[in-house]
Image 1 (tube, helix red, strand yellow):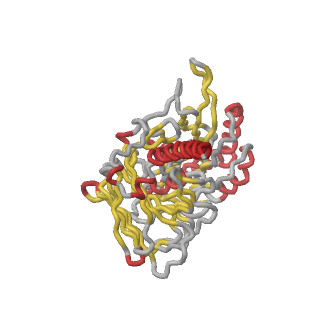
Image 2 (spheres, one colour):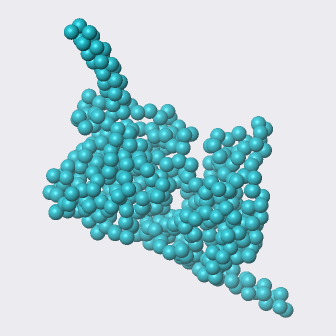
Length: 449
């Protein structure tokens, strides 16, 4: 009789979980423990708060030698806490040509069983393991089917989500790329696809943006058509951006209080900018630039991806190949309006907005694509903005050879021209040779005197 009562109770709980329109997820921040058992107190607390699924932080501290032990520990943790646990581990696989280390995303159900596995080779060169072209999925007992991804998949995978509205992402990104890294891209990816995206450090609810809190409730099927700006804050690991090949012009802070327009082109791809800063501009701590790029960029040393970029970005120090923000990232420049638009030829375009303070929301944010791929990003009343970008992904050009081609340098203005790395290298070469010639001539003249 007691067994029957328990069975009925479990059935009722299961039915209620399916009937609910929401589920609860938990994030534990960026702290990574080498001993997975140290997550037990946090997992128990999550269980007490009726959490359904947890994505554990991932790093490079887990070794393939401890894979079996780590799997056993995670299985025990899932059983003890009655939670779905998603984790990222390193694993050794025996291949015909020897052992291969792979990155593995594992999903444990409430009974501690592995219900989904997604693997990639550690060095992105597969011998006997491979990356599936289809999105790996798993279905939970609380009525949600999830897509399982690694962070770089957000950048590398073309659109095609098979109707999925909920995704979990784990595994450290193998690379950052100029104007596009995992920290900045996750909210934009969730925004464009209008899906729930659970990472180890944050949760994004489609176009409603980032959901604050350690324990967050998400709609199983997003219906609300919100339009919150997909903000991201500066990563602590950020050093500088590689701007090789970008066409760059400075924002004219003398004209900007009255508002002005400017078009910047990279070959035939042109971006139209409108910039208006608020009156009473203080001495800026950093400069702002307008930039355009169209072509192939290198990603994680084994992928070359097609991109088109229109961006307004801040720089404390701008060099010939990089933009550095420095240690002081709060800007004194307040924008009354910024508008960026272009006719993109890319597959999909993402709005990326980097700020030093996510709490300061805009009065107005708009992002839309009209016929003929005319994409526009506009914000009003923005402060502490470090980067406002439309990032276009042209998947048809992926894996083409990365190169920087400046066929139209003759049509560039002087400022564009000096940022052509090839031209800078040329003048460096000429200057070195000229100095040698000057020294030789000087010695000859002195000897003749």
